[in-house]
Amino acid sequence: MRKDIRARRGIPDSMPLLSAGRHVSPADGACVMELVSVLAGLRWTDRPRCTHPALAELARVINDRLPDGEQARLAPYAPQLVGLRPKDLRVTPSLVQLCIDAREPAPASGAPRRRARRAARRLQAACGGRHRWWLTVTEPFYRTGSRQAIDDAVLEVARGPHPARELVALFERAVTLCTYLRDSSAAPRQPAPSPQPG
Image 1 (cartoon, rainbow, N blue to C red):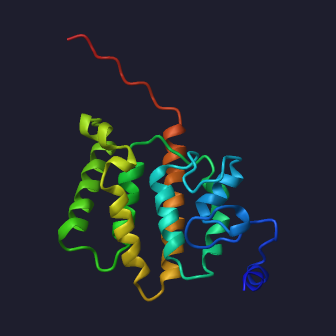
Image 2: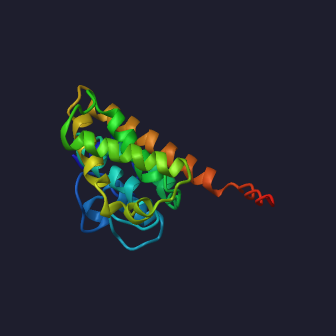
C-alpha cells in the first residue's frame, strides 16, 4: 500500500510518507509539520518553532482531515514553512478569518460566530496600529480561542463535497498570506514624523 502511494506520487524512499496523526519516527511516516522539523534540522516534532503556531496548527489539522493518501499533496509546501514565523500581529487573526471565510455556509451563531467576531476585532486593531494591552497579551496563539476557531472551520470544510481540493486550496492561501505578512513586515518602514512644535 505504502509503496503504491510512493510510486503514484513520485515520492523518494528517503522521504517520510505523509499520513494522518503523530508519528514516532520518520520510518513510521510523518505529518507535514514533522516533515518541516526534518527539513529545518530540528528535533523530530509536529510543533517546530520555525513556523508560526497558528499556521502550524492549520497545517496539522488539514493534514489529519485530508482523506487517506491525500496528505502527500501538502509535501510541496513543507519547505516554505521552514522559517515562516512572521512577527506581525495580524497573522493569527488573519488566518482565523481566512479559515472562517472558507466555511460554507458561514457560521450564523454560537461559538464559531463569536470567534469570527473576535478575530475580526483583533485584525482591525492590528491593522490600525492600535496595540492595545489585550491584543498584545492575548496574541500568543494558544492563549486565545484561535486554535478552536481554526479546528472548527477546517472540520466544516472537510465535510464539503470536495474535501481534498478545498483543504489544500485553503492551506495554499494560508501559506501565501503568511509569506506576504512576513515580507511586508520585514520591509523598511518610514520613520514616524516628528511632532511639530505648537
